[in-house]
Amino acid sequence: MAQEIDLQALSRGEKSAWDAFVRRYAGLVVAAVRGVAQEGGDVEDLVQEVFLRLCKDDFRLLKTYDPSRAGISTWLTIVARSTARDALRRRRLAQTPIDAVPEALLATDATPPEKLKVPDGLLSPRQKLVLSMLYDRDMEVAEVATALGVDPQTVRSTHHKAMLKLRSHFSTEEQ
Amino acid sequence: MAEPTGSPEQAALWRRWCEAAATPGEPTAAEPDALTLAAYAEDRLSAEGVEAVEDWLAANSQIASDILAARQVATFASATAPEAVIARAAALVGGGAQILPFRAQAARPSWRNAIAWGAMAASILVASLVGFAMGNSTYATLIDGSSVSLSQELLDPPTGLFNADEDSAI
Image (tube, rainbow over all chains, first blue to last red; front, side, top):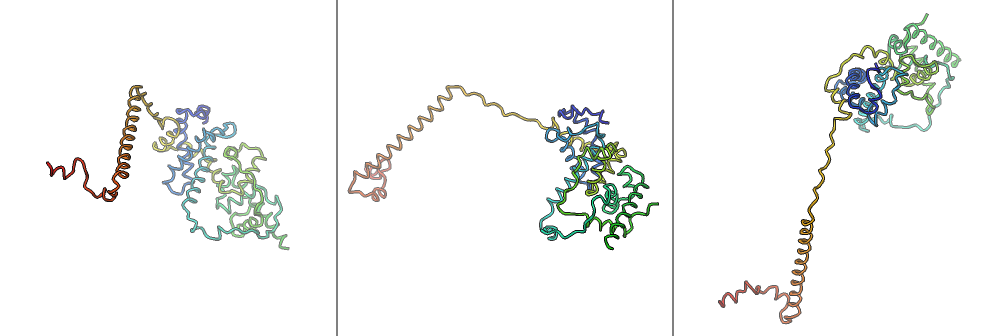
């Protein structure tokens, strides 16, 4: 898909290349941003923020794109969602008065509580990721499988092995 | 055979591990850039690269939905955007803004400059002369008529054009 767009002309700031780029990928950016935006009204502004980020500072971000490492649609999806999430976070922070933040969140504890020691490498990065997506993000097994590019049975198996390790670790610790 | 996922006991075990594993101040895995995440989503990374990304993703699982979306990019790659959105984004580069230069001020002929400066000098001269004459007259009045006090001078009717005595003499 990258071949359709003259990336060199684009990074030189040529208006015709930029127009073609916007026309070609605006739909993708809208769809990517819509997945992050909570309210429909924000989508247009968020799309504008994405394109602004791509072209600002003399196309600095766009110049980092390397077609040999990833497809432009995949890269744009990651950039669009990340930009949209950052923009929404900034807006939420700007709109939240300090009085509305619970004091417990503002308090800082100089002495962190003692933690039980967990051996490094007890869980592999993938096992941690699978458990985090399943329990922190409430993702379905099929979604986790798609995100990791594996089949659902592999996700279940990874989950099972991770649970065995955790049970074994904590039962030993309690004894 | 893998056990079913998502039981409360399993979730509690995961929470317990998270609490035990979280160490404040401990350095976390370096954040991968967008291109690395995109390469991960396209299965283009080496085993070490995959492990590094997954290590970071495990601590930042909100980004996992980005990976999921990136893997499903084909489903919305053909999506279209409203024309207004396209026009607004296109205007970000070139053509959208036109810079209007200030018009250069036309050079004034030298004779007009001479007149302007001459007029200014003449007005300064006239103002100086009038001021000098008025000051001189006031000074002469104050030191000359010793019998007439200043307050009397101020209260007396004016002499000259509007002198009532002269009018009555006519």
